[in-house]
Image (cartoon, rainbow, N blue to C red; front, side):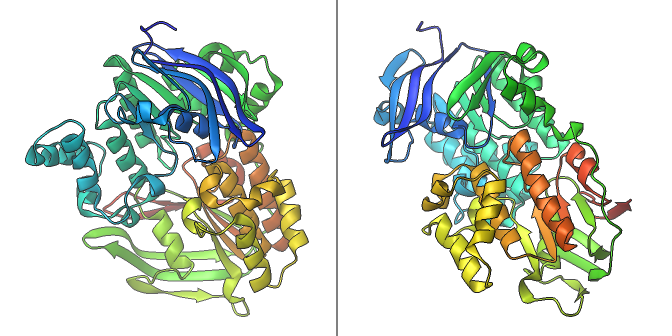
Length: 475
């Protein structure tokens, strides 16, 4: 391919032993161009990005060629591209929990990119980092650890770090995951600025609105193969492949609202709840009741305290003020949480099967119950032999859902439970979750930035305001 291409991928394949995970992927991008990868969860989109970077797990074998800014190397020659990380080639990984160092403050993690990659003096690097964090609404977060900020804030921090080296080729994996509409638009503007500056962008996303906003070309992946590709406007407006048509039709905006049975007794009563971190007030004097059988949607800007409120309601952290009263007779495990970052909720050195079998043993459930849930969620049992870091975010989120439902909870706090899933898998997973809570009369508290999902699923909505905090409730 021509040296005019900033990034050219030819016949890229990835194998594990004799199994093909990616089958002959090819594309090329010039300055100012963009490519969006969409498709089902586990189709190999993130795997493709890691193969281009030269950062595959040692058990995986890559084939084909990668041309980066005029220099061609074998796909399996990781060393040929690693020296160009940050300077010419950069990646925003799917999971900010893995991308950020949990033992260091956010500010120094950004400033070191300017110092080590851009070669700026330490004081200048710190000043630039401070300005960049301010520009993405993270000024006060500079002195916090990644685990002290919300998932959306961590996502914005990781995005700033990925872009700090000024790489001409930028790959971003689910860059708008966990972000409200304002910050989604901001991320799209940042990606467009890379194009205008003469770079190129590869975006992996399940949000077709992002693909439409960026334009350019799109590749639709399924089971490691390209099923359709072309200009975004052509493919999304007149899809030729049945899978692409199903992908578009499964957008939550097209779902029919799902009715619910009348709400029952009060499961949880919260009175006068307040919570702050240092000088940062999240919510204050909040009264809230959760009824058996209802589906309560919790919304608000990134960093407004949605996940923290869930942790307080579930008893995972104490409120600063206020009281919580559970219904009588509930078992200790009756309240369960689906975490926003599923990788953080699994023991990293334990297989997924062992994690599930531990739940079965501890709560005296049947393994057949787990298998039935995994079948409905389209999780192959062969996947369970792997550790959490060896599966996609979407696959891990479905395993997490099966684990929570195995306990048969009275209340599920689901924190962005489908943000890592493609629209088809999202629709299937939500059907499994809703069927389970409807059958048992459990309550669901759903955190989501997706208005379509909120409208189709929720029976009541609570909206947390951005600091200075307040709360607005609507039915």
